Image 1 (cartoon, rainbow, N blue to C red):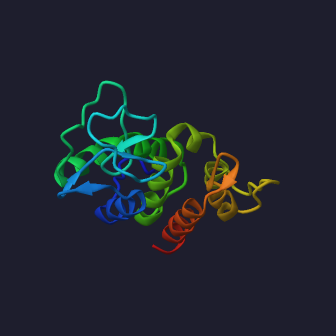
Image 2 (cartoon, rainbow, N blue to C red):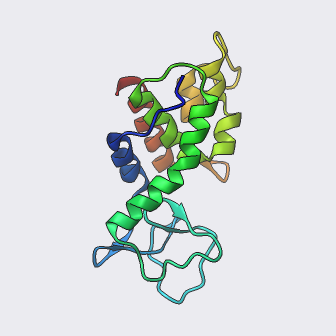
Length: 169
C-alpha cells in the first residue's frame, strides 16, 4: 500500500529544520547532539557526536574536514533509508504524502526499532485499538518527548509540529 512512497522534498526540508545542524564557514562540522556545540578538531568524539542533519558518527567515520551542504543532504538521504523502510513495511493503512513524511520524520528520530514497537504503529494498523496508557493516537505520538525520564521541551515542541504535519499537511 505504501511500499513505493518516498519522503517528499517538503518532508526533507521539515526534517532538516527539526534536526538542525552546525556550520562554520558554511561547512557542516561535527557537533555534540546534546548541546549543539561544535566539537573542536582533534577532540575525542563523544557517543553523541553528530554531523549534518542528525547523522550520529560511528567509529571509523572521519568527518574532520566537515561537509558541504550537498554532502550533508546526501548523507541525510542515505540515513533516511531505514526510517522509510520501517514505515513502508510496517504501516498497513493507506497514507497521504504528508502523513508518510511525518511518520518517516518520527521514525528517523526515535529509531526504526522503537517505531516498530510503538503504540503509534498499533493505532495506525489495528482498527479500534485503544491503549490504556495513551488513549489516542495523538497522545501516543506526543509521548515520544522524553529523555532520561524527563520531558524535553524541544522534543515536545517537535512532536507537536510532527503531529500537526500528520493531521493537517
